[in-house]
Length: 246
Ligand SMILES: Nc1nc2c(ncn2[C@@H]2O[C@H](COP(=O)(O)OP(=O)(O)OP(=O)(O)O)[C@@H](O)[C@H]2O)c(=O)[nH]1
Image (cartoon, rainbow, N blue to C red; front, side, top):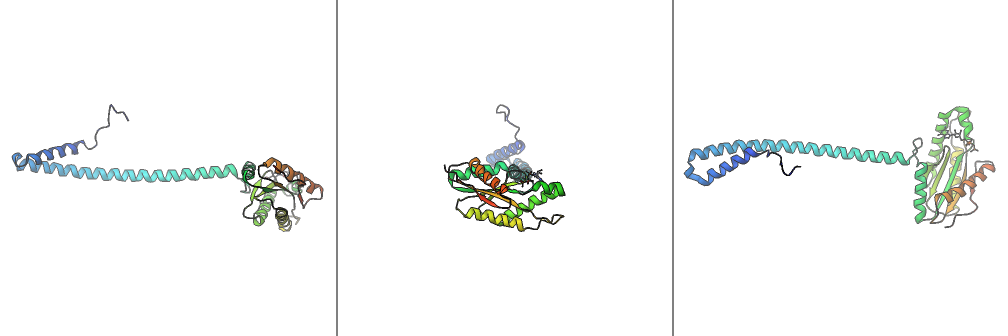
């Protein structure tokens, strides 16, 4: 706002009639009844207009406030949606690679943890035999199995096409291997409804990380264990030989 050129006073006319009424009131009887009557009439007209204008302004400001509230709400919804999209896998809804890595690293700063890495067995065959969309439904089915059996404190992430990690925010042994075993069984026994009636299995590697470690350490060991599981015939859980100590 320009201080040298203030905006015109919206109520200048009312202000003037107030001044005139005040002057008539103060001069009282000397001014004569006619002048007082005239001033009172003007004052009434001004006061009515003042009320009309004030009500109009209050309505307008209420509308503006409501619009602002709605816009704020929409902005918050969009920010949450953006945050969700930036951290979640669009197909399965679990954490994406960057988000699970961050979650593991954050957790490892404060606590020990266990990391399970799993990979669907012979998944390429599913895609090649039945097509990519059926492959996608298998991925979704596997994630549903994981969600159904992991403890509430676990975090599931998709780190690659058919590869997932599960963060268990503790490092009790053999509890984490048991969780992996439960996931393995859930996948093995699930009816995926493939056209040839074949079943789906997955292989698992489990590692443990001490406080102060990082995702790469835990993932490297779990991935090695996963490789052993694949080499050993798939559909099995292998624990990493060494825990990572900080
Ligand atoms: N349908 C589908 N397929 C995917 C997706 N991401 C990766 N893939 C497929 O996953 C398959 C992975 O195959 P491979 O890495 O050869 O492994 P595999 O056939 O599972 O064999 P093993 O891991 O050795 O048991 C490839 O065919 C990829 O095209 C996806 O989002 N949807």
